[in-house]
Image (tube, one colour):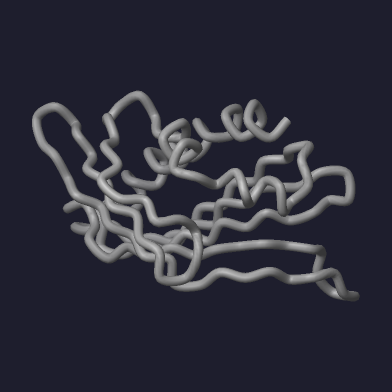
Length: 150
């Protein structure tokens, strides 16, 4: 199992950032290629699902994720204020064997940090090939997060 973590500092408070995780933001975060078609976007709460089709011109792949956990951690001596949700792959593109993505928005006091914490495994031993491709896809989100959330 591979792990990929990216952090993006933004200026808005963490709860305000969480409320911005909508279908519109999801579409804005999609890279220009391959094209992503959203067939269903329920939201970011436990039990919600997201169904997409990845259209890479020569082939199409379905990807279905289900939100398996969401919650809020209020400030105490150990944790900062945080809101999070976790999606797991139900139906994955052929090159992925497993997928779990924890989206955390953590208060910094002056804004927040969006943390994309991804655990995945690729088929056919291609973890080290898929890793940089996923890193690029999620690094692409950083300037979008900053534009949307200040």
